[in-house]
Image: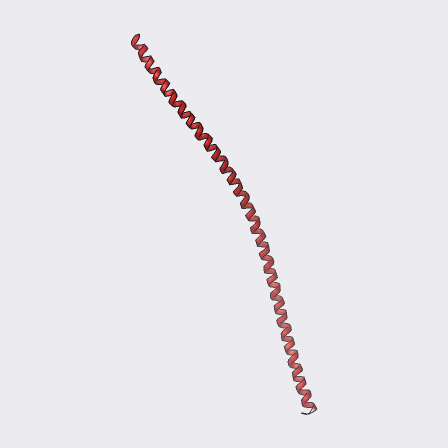
Length: 112
C-alpha cells in the first residue's frame, strides 16, 4: 500500500470517526433534552401531589367538622327524645287526673 493510499484510508477513517462523534453528540443532546423534560414532568407531579395533599387536609377538616356536628345532633336528639317521653308521661297523668275530675264533677252534679 502506497503512502497516498494509506493517507486516503486514514482520512476516510478519520471522517467516519468525526461523523460518528457528531452523531453521538446529537444523541447526547437529545438525551439531555429528554432528561430536562422528565425533570419538568417530575416537578409538575410534585406540585400536583402538594395540591392533592392540601385538598386532603381540607377534606379532613371538613370531615372532622361533620363528625363533631353529628355528635352534637345525636346528643340533641337524645335530649329531645327524653323530653318528649317526659311530656307524654305528663300528658298521660293529666288525662288520668282530668278523667277523675270529670267523674267527681258528675257525682257533684248528681247530688245537687
